[in-house]
Image: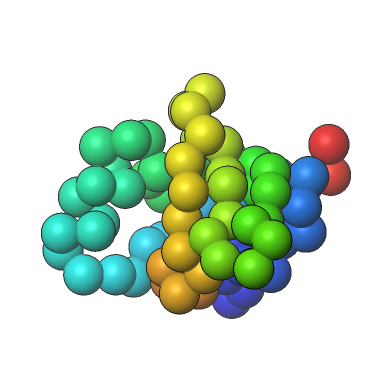
Amino acid sequence: MSSLLSVPLGERAVVLKISTEKELLRRFYDIGLIPGATVTCLHKSPFGDPYAIEVSGSVIAVRKKDLKKIFIKEAKIN
């Protein structure tokens, strides 16, 4: 199973599962980052961390270490 970190910039993926601590999981769920959601990887900061992703019409910054805990079902090319 690959993580959201493996999705190239500009491509989309469908979230399969999120394996992180309870507090962060709740934050992700609150913003719509849930299993079944489609996520687009938009940008990577100049130093490589964090990444900007789009989910449910919002752009959020997610740390690289947290992207490794978001597992995807498949990647879709725009």
